[in-house]
Length: 174
Image (cartoon, rainbow, N blue to C red):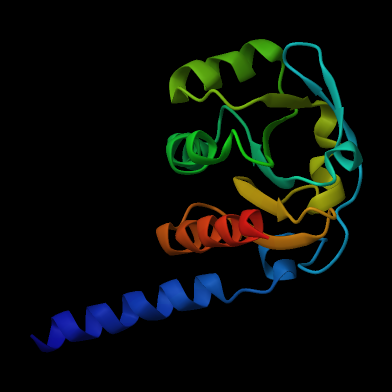
């Protein structure tokens, strides 16, 4: 019993410390409360979208890649628990496939079953406006209707994912 309690305390500490990390500890170069860097993205269907044109909507940016196992794990949750619930609201969700050709991005879409739009982040130029060049993915950036960053995630942690969903829900009610 003592070992079980020690293990639970250890796990709680890991979860809490993982959620309490500062953005710079997670590879971000942006912070909650800042305006999101603007960019133009090319969707896989050829459509171009400029982030600043999405003002008035709550926006979720999901940085991903086909080689990222954690991304593959997280994407079906994003599809089911965020996109399908909010896609008909003032909400925009874009996956940004980091520096891969369209064929690899399509394989990722097929493997994860997602229906939200994916943009190709050629050379990782968009990613590098938000995070250090050599830092990893998956990561999500949530923006309010004015384009200000209100939530950042790194990797896939169920508690952090639930907190992100709550932030999105609260922002959509405003």
